[in-house]
Each structure stands twice: as structure tokens, then as C-alpha cells.
Image (cartoon, rainbow, N blue to C red; front, side, top):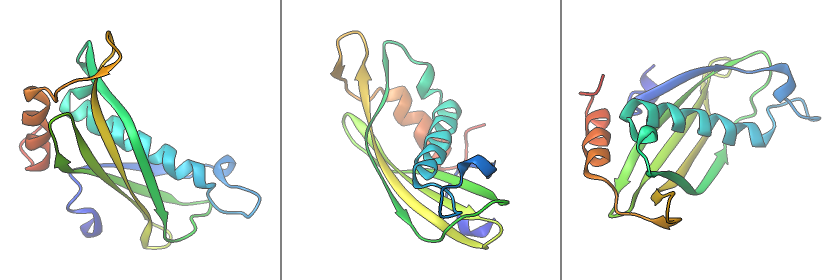
Amino acid sequence: MSILQDYPVTLDIRVRWGEMDAFQHLNNTVYIGYFEDIRIAYFERTGVISTVPIGPILAATSCRFRAPVTFPDTCTVGARVNEVTEDGFGMEYAIYSHKLQTLAATGDARIVSFNYETNTKAPLPDLWRQRIAMVENGTAG
């Protein structure tokens, strides 16, 4: 799908009836859940999630709602890394509604490298940098 061609990791998610709210559209909290689903898929693709005791932790996230999604629909969610820093990286998300044929939401997040033994930030491991670069340039499997 060309609208998400710049997002190296994508995931198709079927909208469930129970995800709608009293106003008959996807509840706003569900968009954040879709962001989580694609973030974890990105982590799995890079191997970031399997490192111990250093692991990723969500420091901040936001969502811009662009179009109301309703049941039935399938959304394609995309993720990409737009910035790598000393102790973390920034991610961008997009949710595309197949029924509406448009972006339903966009968002971003700040991910921090975290030492779960000491409960402190940690320098971003070089392996993470390498694997993120591989995913972003299309050379990761």
C-alpha cells in the first residue's frame, strides 16, 4: 500500500465490534492499543524486545485522530523510527482505514533504553542501532 510505503513494519488489524464506543466509532484508546501492537511487532523484528536486562520502555506517546473508524473495517498500522539518540529513539505511527481509504490516525512515541535491574535509563545498545538501521533501510528479514 503506497500510503504506508515509508513504514518498514506494517500490521493488518481487523476492527472488532467491541472496540467501538457509544458514538459508534473506534474508541480513542484503541488507537493507542494499535500503536502498541505495531511497536511490539517492530521490536520483535529488530530483536530489541529480547535483550535483558536492557530493554525498551515507552516514555511518551501521542495520537492525532484524522478520521473516525467504524466496524466493520480492517486497518493497516505502520511504524518507523525517525530519530535515534544516545539513550533511545523516536517512532512514528500511521493507521490506514481500508473502508475509508485514508489515514485514520497518526502518532509518535519516544522509546528509552532502560536497565530493568537498576531501574535507570541506559545507553542505547549498538546492536539496537544496527538492527533499527537494517529495518529502516529494508535489509532486515
